Image 1: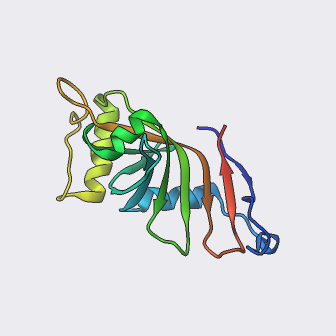
Image 2: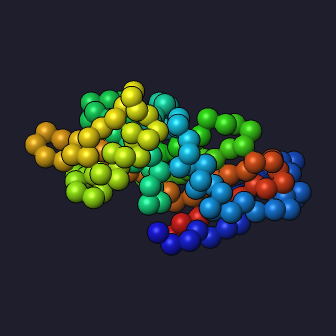
Length: 166
């Protein structure tokens, strides 16, 4: 993944964007995404109704990896419209990822081992998928969200930062 372009988000007058004096580093933001236990995923249904669901997942190699049954509302929404938003739980020191979520290719071998190890590190014993959980007959449900834009701040409005990925 290439390094993101860094600038300020577009905000209406009165939100303090002109008071911003610092930029966050992508390393800092990516560390928050990697370390988070809980994420909120927002999708839009085919009839344009919003849908938000808490997700477990892992941030690896520049993307968010998570799984879920193809029968869940959020996956059915994403089958129709891949655009989505992912938000960490903290609303004061916010991290918001905008991008597209799509079904991932089966994960096996070294990649399956890495994914499994990261899920187990974060969620075992509650959730500890095997390295082959996302490959083989009947496997599925592994998805990846790749960022297009990330908005983040730790001290609003001082360090409001927008990261753009091409």
